[in-house]
Image (tube, rainbow, N blue to C red):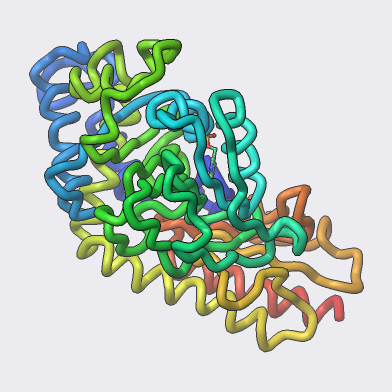
Length: 359
Ligand SMILES: *Cc1c(COP(=O)(O)O)cnc(C)c1O
């Protein structure tokens, strides 16, 4: 069997232990004579899976009682519409513009109400996270929206803004489960699964109960949080296999020692790469130091035209999907939870060798 270190921004690596468990259980799940994909979503066996998945997520993220966990479809991109359709009661919301995904979220929200950009780093190519304080927030805004980790630009909120009584909504697609966060600071957290949770097709929503049940009249049934909350995410057929895989990933995190242990490992991985980039006069980081993501690390080789060669030679060494996003250029290493420390070490070793032979 060949496994590579896959630095893709998403879909991304899954832990090998999780894939092997899924493989072992694939044709005959717990003596049912069926795979999880073939089980009815109303069956006892699947009920156990979805309930355990929720319980595990509550445990590892320490989710308070007054929050619901929803397993839905449509990706994080569908949340860009679901959030305003459900909670934009006064017709206006504050957004922080920190990158391509924030912009897409704003574009969608504008269809349903007024979007106020209270802070932006667009003038400086989204290379930093602006500071947010309460005086910037409209007290009558229905919510404040942030993108906690900017997957494309490689920036991240190192501090969660205090929005007072205005609910904070976060697109946490690319850093959920990577570090310890206080869920009670948020009104809604949403994340597409394909970065840190499991396979694509599942979206996780964590929502404070008082924000459910206020959807606009035009809100489609399937986009109303209440539909999914009232039915335990079983209004229609949920992405059953994705939920099963997410459950295995949550178990894997718990066995590793929980989010704090994962965070420590993630910080070590990011430091390995950033320390190397910082000491090098060949590689460079486009991101301001106080805003660096520990999940997505873009880097460039200024003054040379070597990006394509770097990506090609890295691939030959089993280091895949390092091409940077077209809007940033250069390279990007996404080092989500499932990327082993050894993968980052192998990348740094390759970067050293590449620098020596091309400088
Ligand atoms: C990947 C990503 C998205 C898009 O997710 P989909 O599930 O493909 O809709 C949105 N926001 C962020 C921050 C992302 O990383």
